[in-house]
Length: 597
Image (cartoon, rainbow, N blue to C red; front, top):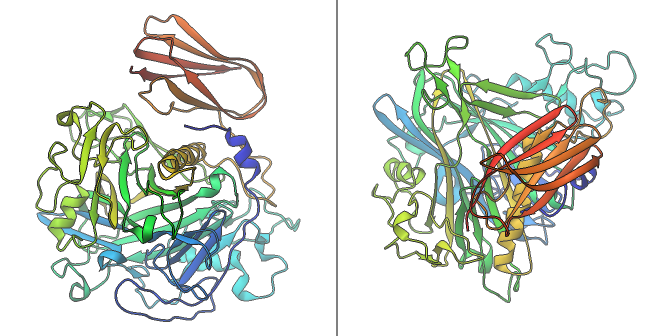
């Protein structure tokens, strides 16, 4: 549930603040190494912005990276030195089929899984360009006035582009060449620039080239997978400042197979919240495509009575073409053919206001396919166990039974036989209704999406968010974190209309006309409806029943351009399906919602 409009958030998205320390001591695999570089960030970087301090390295490790002068790694709330750890280790798992052979890999230090190395398949891990690149919204356009070569972020982006990074091709020549053509000292839409998504944007590329002999699963060979990772955030102490966005662009290079099938991608996290993580609980929210970790009890050492909640949300899942579901397969060949088949759905690829929104008729973005919890001591020991975890199954491959599962209870009168076992602890810990985790311990959480295909040279783009919320108690923090997560999803769905400062992009519209899906949905009796207006106009926000009868007028009158949210209380209406309609000038949009009492 959201309580404020995104307009306020956008006004707070201003210049970035970050630190640079070009050394790394990485823990989690029992070793400690130190690297030095003269590049913009090099091996490691601490995204110290808004309410987060998040270290990362160029191999896909989040949080579990020690960057001096900090004496502990970890994603923290607040300062990198004095802040308290919320996330000990973050990374990912992936599994799929290569013809008839199962494979599984990942980058998750707390589970001792380290299968990815910096660099591309074409140039290898020893390519000196295979570093972390950082560009800020406050960096001078075209590096004007910057004398230190190590700080010329727009120029250094050329090396990132050579390894697969995106850029805005203003002159449409296919080559990244950031030149101030008219000499006005500002970027203009006909000029090239880096792919800047937030107030601070980081980029790196890594690939699954770790030799089998050095893997935890030494029976898994490299599959030819490259991941181009972008991490970005906005400099705000308000709601959106609780979010870090991570985009994974996954490429099958064809090194091992032209098609990797039945692929699942999982965000794996080892949060450490209450009592250094030893008394944490986990849960999932299928409406938000999210999993979360929280600590409801009071403690004296770390957070007192107000422990935060940490959420991982799939903002954008992989696109998938499914005959009969996302398109009508008119020629019955099992594949979507543009101009022949009939699209039923359309997938999108959010790339930021300047880069534009990609649309893929005939496909859809997959959501959360399972949420699984495991804990210290039952980490996946082979590729079969990891595959089972990503499918929401036990380590032996069986379904979890909510009726008998000892780590959780089904409360509030819910029939345990009706609870989907693939989404562990999908109940509400605030109201204590549904499947609730009841065994506090040092936990890891896995949020998965799939299945999808990795076809040679195609790119699958997945975007997740790390979101934190801290309320008046441990359970209230769950509600606050979900509110922050909804705000992050709305900002993402609007294709990040707030562009960075100092750039002359007045010719580009900042806000689209949008009517968001209400949240929660189904609901009882309150839900929030959000919408965006690209220009000032008279509007009406109306609610109808299935007979087409008007039952509520939620808004009516003149509104300025901006983003709005309104709480709809349906306590006086019977259960059922309703439609809400937004009219604004020439725009009209309708969405469906369900009231269950």
